[in-house]
Length: 346
Image (cartoon, rainbow, N blue to C red; front, side, top):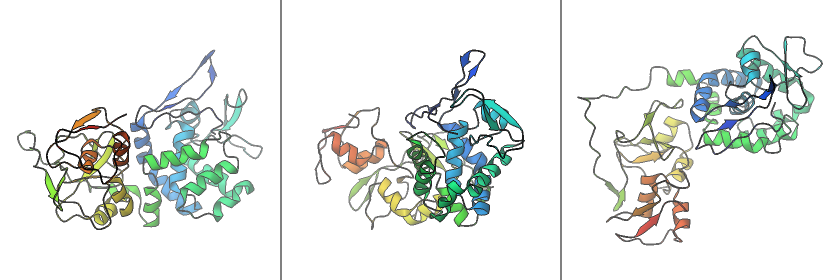
């Protein structure tokens, strides 16, 4: 259980979870990175969705706690005890145990025969203990309230526990699992045999399309070959990455509502991520970010070309428009000209 020893740095960089223990006189560190988190989500999403149906605990909360408490399944407690939620023995436990240094030396933790058993016991732990009863008066889709109430009810002593859970859920869009449960499907049903295979001819790179225009303004487009691709557990669409931010490429006739439905996010959030108004729609091949863009870009400076707008630059470099405005002391009505130097990072 998180008792102040878990630390997490910037999600865009390598994430270190430090679990302090004394083994043969030295400390043991369990490390995991962003890809480990994504792999953990995919591996245990269906069991979390199943428990959400059985016990009415948000899958997003279950997964986020599992990531934190088990260091993505890499902690000693998780590896040797299949314990992904840091649950200690307590007087009622009659099963196997494992001793781990936590708040005190050699504390007793529950040991399970499988990770699935750990997930079930986590659900029972919350549903059968009176101290957590007020959790089940909350909206099951309100992961923020669940995270804060878990901390309030004493699941962890770390004062930042709730904020960490919320940040993790939002950074990796884990709340989409709750939406899957709401829609009556599992993650495997969404992803099974639905990802289209890219067609590669002669291994030649596909040329980048010419910039498109929307309402007379230049729009940043791409075909994807110039960006690293990745598989998303939440959509059949091909997902790409720019400035450590995931995006999809709009197809002919796409709307933000259609894309939002395909990737299980709210259309209003998509519009916010891409700095567009309620009456605008993407054009073919336009980049559509499916999560919040970054706060800066290593390129640092961009020289404005003819026809470019501040939004175009924001989309090209994957930097939130509000930060570009802030770095350059501009506002949304500011006009830029060819040759202007735009700061992309403070």
